[in-house]
Image 1 (cartoon, rainbow, N blue to C red):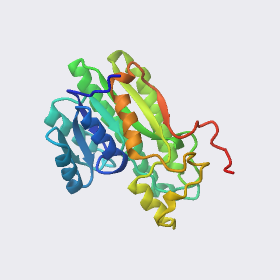
Image 2 (cartoon, rainbow, N blue to C red):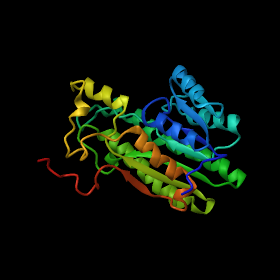
Image 3 (cartoon, rainbow, N blue to C red):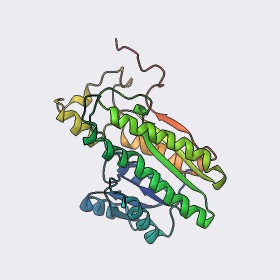
Length: 260
């Protein structure tokens, strides 16, 4: 199975921690040149140095309209092309029907849906100009289907990302640009740890996971997600496009199982 990414350049957004950092490492190990995106210059610089000479970094707030151009141009300046894109960066504040919508909606959708679209535009422009194939992997969420009552706006944004994935997969087939999405389940990242603790969970909350939520008794790891991201970026997953793949411990149909 050919999962090599040799001689390709890949942008990974939200690459300074968690799933994004795990993906960046996995992509780099497969021979790609990697542009690490994030908002913490010190962390990004350290991680690029850790990876090696084929890693670069760029700071941009994806809530800003100009951010996608900044990220894409940094990759073009450093590597000369954009062959792959992992739209991983996202925000997941708690919200429900009683939340003041104006305090969250625009920021969540700008980062989780608009920025991925604008970065996809830049990859498409570059690949078309070079008459080269490309691959986009959007990191979605199981919550794209209907979500939970405390993550309403986040779930809506991931639903929008899922529709974008299928639309672009359909539209870009003749350009040989593949667009696929990983709908990821509950994953143990530092962001999730911080969120759970802010809600009053004990320090060891992740060691006592209800098996109805995680049948093996533990959450997904960023490294497990990264393995799937590499596959969908690589020729091994060709010619599939417009696919939404569930990276979860159980089928979506069956989530209402009651723990014994």
